[in-house]
Image 1 (cartoon, one colour):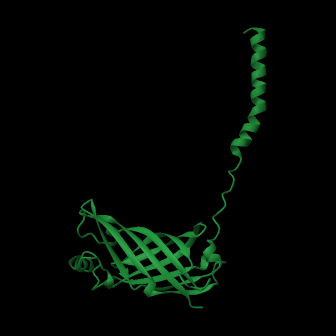
Image 2 (image 1 turned 135 degrees about the horizontal axis):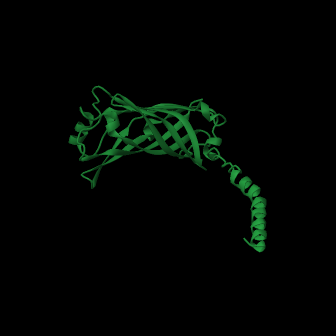
Image 3 (image 1 turned 60 degrees about the horizontal axis):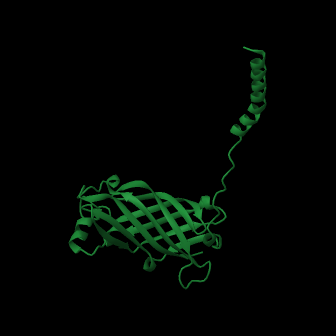
Amino acid sequence: MTCRNRIALVLALASSAAVLPGSLALAQAPAAAVAAPALPAMLQSLPAGRYVVDPAQTVARFKVRYLGVNHVEGTVPGASGTIMLDPANLETMALDVVMPATAIATQDGTFDDELKGPGLFDVAHYPTIRFLGRRLVPTGPNAARIEGEVTMHGVTRPLLLDATFADPAGAAPGAGLAVNASGVVHRSEFGMTKFAPFVSDDVRITITAVLNRAG
């Protein structure tokens, strides 16, 4: 190795040593924390307390694909229940809603009888569907994810609902809460396997609800 090459090698090593500490510091610098979404504005304006489901303005809808092309759609009206809500302490949120499986209806009375019979909802033994909301996680200006569990056909499974909030039509601010929520359940997880695979396992649900302040 010539003298000139030795000098070049020493300079290169010195340059690398000078740059390395800064590079390590950059690589080891913690990522900036991502701020959690703020509590939906609609919820911020609500007084803490108990809110009761209005059955006349609350309905669950479901949609399931069959034969890979068409869909069956139906409703479950007549829900009842409550939510305990304190906007300043979301950890105390408790939602309990019960829907009558006996009220399930599509536009086909014969299929309604199938839905209510053995192999599907079996309403003679399991007349209700119950959802318990355990946690509310803000996801947007007027949106949140509701984490909980649903029980139907005698089986309980986790369920996530994506929800948006608004003032009920014609109600004074703070008097109540209008909710639109959606999610997906897999009927096989509840032992409801009749008509598989001709009827899809995935059932998309949407819930439109109004809850009025009870105190």
